[in-house]
Image (tube, rainbow, N blue to C red; front, side, top):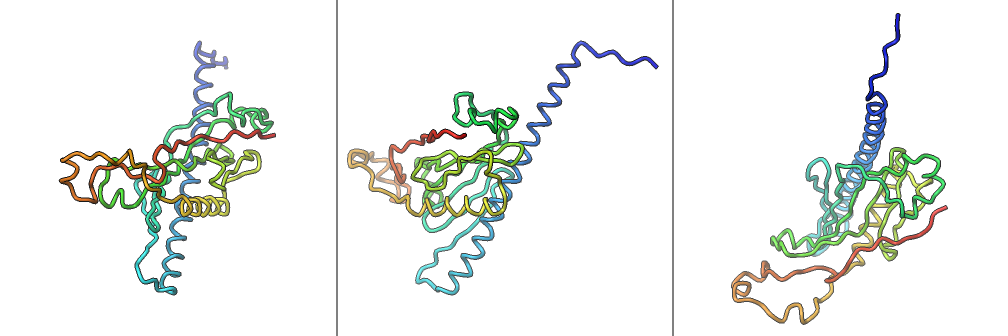
Length: 234
């Protein structure tokens, strides 16, 4: 029986299949990681409730985990909310990124394709009072590849940077450490009084609104920007 001849597009089709399959692996690994973070946050909320019942604080200060669709969940505690958002697409790490110089990537370039989970911090009152102009802050983002290896980008003062792509693997234990560190960082990232010049003028329209929806931007750091730290990895 004669062998079928390859079509003119055979090589192209094979490349599409191979690359798409790899990206699907990355997507599933990232989706699994988000599930681990969600599970950890839910358990923490339950443990917190048990602790609060024992301590019987004067005021009710709940911790609540809420799901917001397939790619997002939040955990609210005190006056803050942390949002964990998974992007539905897969990205390749830029060629000029320090991680791309690591032997881990050079051994298998496909390891440079990652899913991303962003962690944003907002004030809970921003949602409670529908203050649409309030600011939220990216406190870190987690990049995860097909092998469930990950690294985190964020400012050094976050205190939970995991830079070793070769050895850092998403597990229930590492997910717990990341969520815990994100909450701990948020507790120390306090609301500062906005600069006087930012609030010295107000319109009649804004003044007529209730104080809770006054239309003035509120954020923990007005003017804060997110810059990923660059550190070399061997």
